[in-house]
Length: 180
Image 1 (cartoon, rainbow, N blue to C red):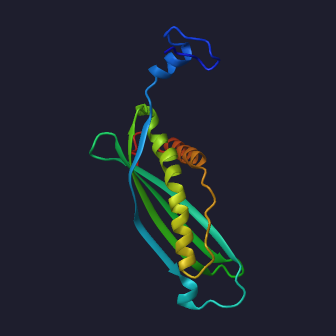
Image 2 (cartoon, one colour):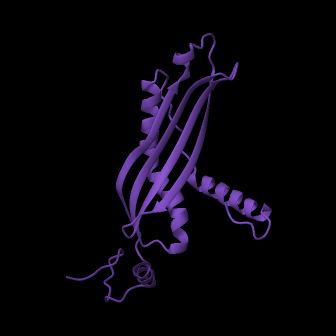
C-alpha cells in the first residue's frame, strides 16, 4: 500500500509545510453538552387590555450575552438573553413582550486563553441561535400573534459594539476608580 497525494504522486512520508502546520496547531474541540430555557416570559398585552382598532406592529429586539466558566475543566455556560417587544406604530401601545434566557453548556478545548472570550460570545451563541429562533416563533404563534421569525444576529458586530462600549467607559472613568 502506498501513500498518494491528491494529484496521484506518491509521497515519501515526509510532511509538507501545510500538513506540519496543521499537525502543530491544536485542534479546537467544541461539544454542546446541554442546552435549556433558563427563563421564558410572554405577555399578551392585547388580550389583557383589549387594544382595538388599526394595529400596525413594530418589533424591537434586544440581545445580551453572558458566559461563565463551570467547575469541570473546559466547560462553560453561555446565556443568550432576548427581549422582543411589539408596539403599535400608531399609538405606541405595547402589543406583546417576550423575554427568553436560553443557555448552553459547552465543552471547549484547543482555544487559546486570549481567544476564549470572543469564542464564547460569538461561536457559542451562533450555535444556539436556531433553537432560540424556533422558541420565539412558537411562543409568539401560541400567544395569538403571527410567528415571529428572528432575523439572524451578527454576533461578531455585537461583540465589537460591546468591546467599544467598554473601552469608552474605561476612558471616561477617572483613574483609580474601580470597574463596575
